[in-house]
Image 1 (cartoon, rainbow, N blue to C red):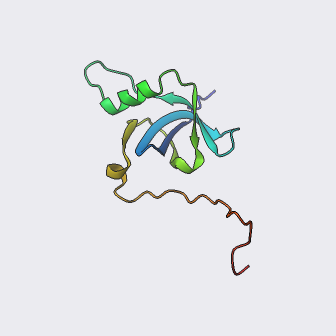
Image 2 (spheres, rainbow, N blue to C red):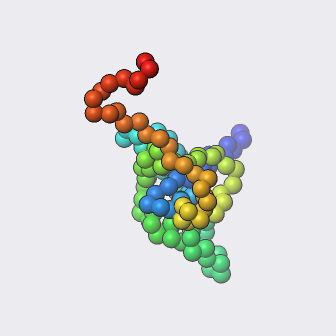
Image 3 (cartoon, one colour):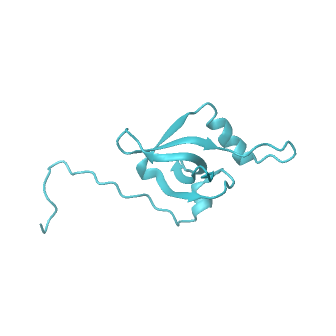
Length: 118
């Protein structure tokens, strides 16, 4: 019998002018319309000598969280990876330097009319 490794996902999303990069064992469409469900967040073990302040900030922010729901339009990327990297949070401006754009969200106009030309 072969051991199949548990899937591991890297999820990058924007929240309050910050760019979050987290690792999780389960990612999927939520029962809450318009949200992505992220479960079983994975953080590195402290070796005692070397502590990453960015990852420590994320650990404290998600302490006691069983699952988190992120608005679908805030998710920038989801990758299935073989190894866990460094979880981090950084400012959107410095992290992207203009390379990340918000996903356009359709909102119907008040009149309910079809766009011109149709």
